[in-house]
Image (cartoon, rainbow, N blue to C red; front, top):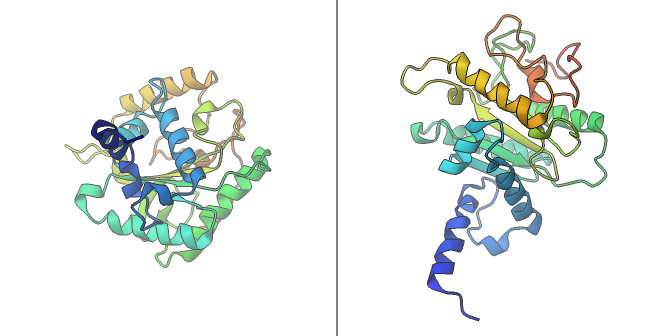
Length: 249
């Protein structure tokens, strides 16, 4: 049965996200592995929930200010994708775009401890592939942030191994969200976003997760805050102790 022009136009609009996938060159939606499409639509459906806590993520998805990559567990894929993402960020129009890196869903991944291990392994591999040292290099510095190619970005680790912290589940596999530091600055003033906005997000997290905000959630630059502790949270409110699982350089 022939597809109406209206339906074709609607399908084309709904597939605009495909043009922002960084690790393929194919423009035909039919060329995508089925799980890529499933992973994206699950992620989008989650962010479209009115009460999803992070309205930065919601706004980025709604405005088409997201890039995507798949099979992020492959070191070469992750490295090439991150290099592309950093290069695109040199364009002022794309500087506030974020990246969602999807890993192949693994039914065997049931342990949250294993997810934490995989998360830090992925970041370690990216760090080792980067020829630009992180500044500052020590994750225990309150001004430290993960970076690649000299570009600082906040990293959010999500996975289905979260049972209580629903805001950290955006699909059936591991998804790493890389948000450039510029996203958290006011466009008009160039200063960090107001604390009131962050408090609003925290209040939404409390409501969505039905549990208190994790005690390690803080504000960048606060002497008592450590960014890396917020990247990959426990599923309860036990404070993260010890040093960052990978060292800066």
